[in-house]
Length: 202
Image (tube, rainbow, N blue to C red; front, side, top):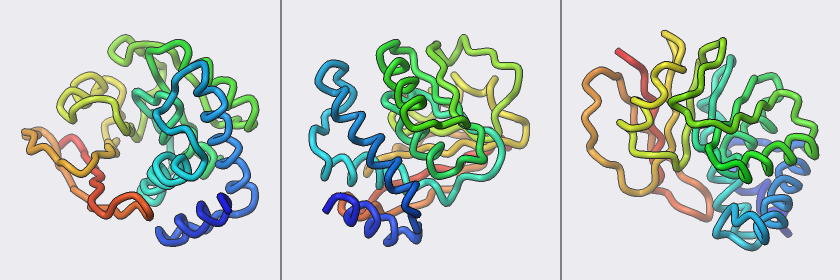
C-alpha cells in the first residue's frame, strides 16, 4: 500500500506524518504523475517509485529546515520546495524555476493543495530581485555547488544558510569563503549514500 510505504519510510527518518500531511503528499505525487504525460516533469512514472525517489528523498531534509523564509532554486516540479511547504505550513516557501510549464504545474499544485505559504516564481535566479532576502536557500538538482552559490548569493540573508542536496558523488569543490558541513543521510528504499550540504558564508 502506497500510504504505508510513505509513512514507514518517513518513520525510518524519525518523521511522523499525520493524516493530512500524508494525504497531501500523495495527492501532490498523483498530480506529478498525471501531469507528466503532457509536461514531462519527471522520469518517474509510477506511485511506488515516486514515493521513494521524490517524496522520501525530499523529506530527508525536513529536519534541517529552520523557521523563517526558504527559497527552492531550480524547483522543477516542486521538489523539495512543495514537500517542505506541506510539512511546514508556518514557513514561507518560494519555489523558483525558469521553465514556464513547470511553474504552471507548481501553481496548479499550490491551488489544489491549498498551500497558502507557497509562492511560485517563473524567472531566472540571477534576475530575481525580491524585496526580502531568504534565510534558507535549498536546491535538489539545480547546478554544481559553486554555480549555485554564485547565482544566488544576492538572495541570501546575512545570517542565512544553504541546504543543498547532492547525490552519491560529492565533488571536492573549493568553498574558501564558506563554512560547510557535510551530512550523510539515508533515504529509505533509495540510498544510504546521499549527501546534504549545509553551507554558510564565513
